[in-house]
Length: 406
Image (cartoon, rainbow, N blue to C red; front, side, top):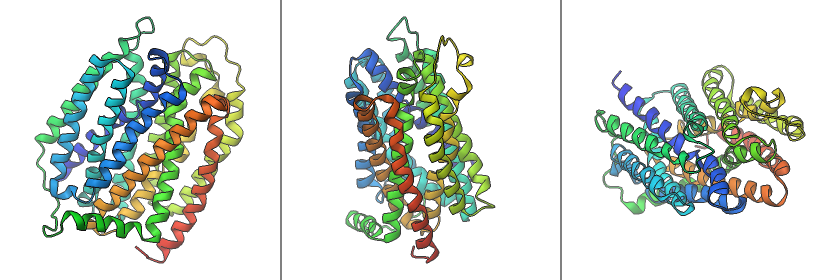
C-alpha cells in the first residue's frame, strides 16, 4: 500500500505525456493544412520531439538518481505546462517545433524516472512485467484519447479553434504536477561517491555488452515501426481514404486503442507463456496484416463519409495491427531491466530512451519521404523490413539471455 501514491503518479505522468507526444501525427496533419508545409517539412516535428529525448537522456540518465526522480518529473511537468500555453499564443509551425522540443526534453526526464522507479516498487520479474505492461497500456490509452480530444476542439470552419486544446493540456499537466508534488516520495538510494564521469563510463560499459547491442537495435526497430504508423495514420486516412479531417484523426484512435489493449493483455499472457513465443506470434501476424490487409484498405472505394459508421469494415482492419505490435516494446524492456541490478537500471533506461527516440525520428522521416515521393499508398509497406529484422533479433536475444550474459 505504501507505493500506491507513487504508482498513481507514474500512471498519471505517463498519461499526460502520451497525449502530448503522440499528438505529433495530428499536428503534422494540421501543419500541412494551416501552415503550408509539405510532408517532408512536416515530418521534422518528429525530430524536434525525439532528438531532445535522445540528447537529454544521454547526458542525464545515469546521473538522474542524484538529481532526484521526483524533482526531475516536476521540472518536466512544469516545462510542458508553459509550452502548451506558448503554443496557443504562438500559433505557427515554429511554435510547434518549440512545443515538441520542450515535450521531448521533459519526457526524457519523465521516462527515465518512471522506468527506474518501476524497479523500486516491484520485487519479482512477473511484477515488473505486469507493471511495465500496464503503464505502457495507460500510455496507449492516452494516445487514443488524443485522437478524440483534438477533434473535440476542432471546428473546420475556424482554422484556429483546435489550439484551444492546449489550455486543457496545460491544465492536465498542472494537475499532474500538483498530485506529484503532494505525494510522499522515498527516493532510491544512490552511491554518493560515483561522479559524473563514472556515470558515462557505466553507460558505455553497458553498450559494450552483446546483449545490450541486440536489445537497443530491437528497440530502435520497433519504435521505427510504431512511430512511422502512428504519426502518419491521420495523413494516410485523409489522403488515401479521403476521409474528412476530424474523422481521419478519430480513425487513427483505433490503432492507439488496439495498442493499449494489446499491452494490457500482454501483462496477463506472458505470465503463462514464454515471451519469445508471444513476440514471435505477434510480429508474424503483424507482417501478414501488412501483406494481405493493407492492399485491400488502399484499394477501398470510399464514397460519402460523414461519420465513423459510414466507413466499410475493412477500413478498420489495418489499425488492428496495434494489437500485435503492442506487446513488443514493454516486454523487451522488462526482460532486460528486471534482470539488471537496480543501480544499472537508470543507465539502461537512458539507452532505451535514446534508441527509442532515434528510431521514432528515422521511422517518421522515412515514412514522410515515402508519402511524398513514393505515394501514400506505398508508404506503410516499408514497415515489413524492420519487422523482419525484429523477428531475427528476438531469437538472438533469447539465445543471449539463455546464457545469462547479463
